[in-house]
Image (cartoon, rainbow, N blue to C red; front, side):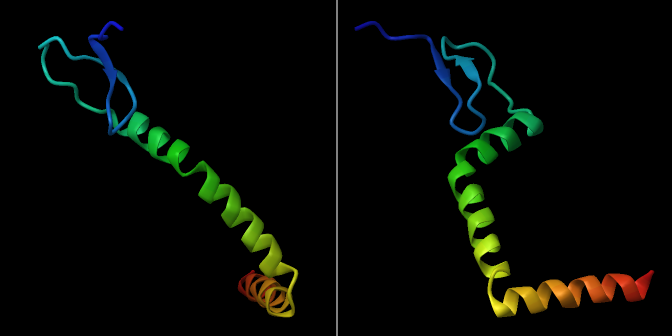
Length: 74
């Protein structure tokens, strides 16, 4: 098996030349995208949990109260 000189950056996932070239600097946007990709399962689960909460009596009350507060400010 051959060893590639390009390896992914552990912080942003970019393909980085490891042959001794100048150090790689992660772009903030790429790092954020990479972190969000790593959290995709947890983000999806949060959406499910919020939906489940809003289906409960407490969730319906919280939703009603938030809508009421928004109307009062208008």
